[in-house]
Length: 310
Image 1: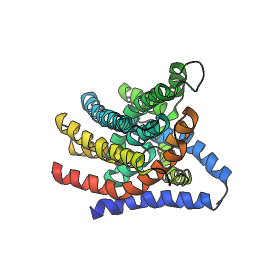
Image 2 (image 1 turned 30 degrees about the vertical axis):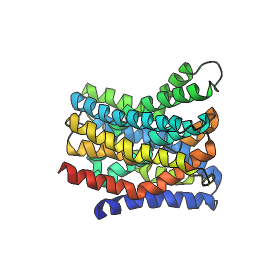
Image 3 (image 1 turned 60 degrees about the vertical axis):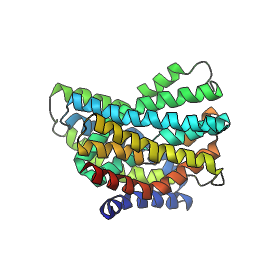
Image 4 (image 1 turned 90 degrees about the vertical axis):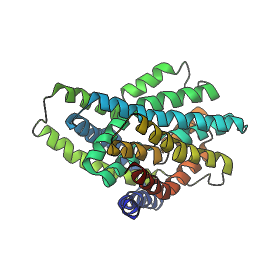
């Protein structure tokens, strides 16, 4: 476990550094806003396209892997929402618990997959990203519309599809996989450039993740926070492990899938909660607490899984 802990420590230290820098106005707030856009629209799409366009693709194996991570997501979502409803939580609280229990931080997952499992781990993680992005977005917005009504005005199906169609992370993965299937191989200069840009993505995005953590709302009630932590950091990875064994995934595929199950919820959950009627202060507390807790639970989860699988 110490080895995994040491491997992921720089990831969380960069997150903390990003938060400290923004809190102290270094260099300024506008810098972090622009950095978010640079990562989201340029650096990460380059990384994902490069990885998916150059990986050795096995469609049957990819389908089993996608099914595994989606099973974990579904189980965490259902468990979190059912417990919230059973406990009589108000709709805004329940929707934030749902997001906290089922969503994942793609950027942190990719960074940890690379740190712990190298280039092969990052490549497999790109497939998990392709499977989870559309399902997560559609299901979360649909659930929040059901809980709060349509706050987008005039229907939500077309706006969701439009958002997915211009999501640079999803588009880059789809294009990368499509290019991969042509069998054309790497294009000189183009792939070299994409690789250089992609290499800059992970350290910068971790600083941005930390910069976007909000400490307000930490006085939020204990029960919703605990339910979201259990859903995200217990139910999600446990279901992934069961599904991986049932679908006969390799050890590396299983461990990378577990990374997605064991990372904290997405920082963007706060924005969605604020836009669609969720409990935004609670959501901020859940994001912050999960990020801190996962620093301990993630290496424990991966270590136990490695011992069990070996």
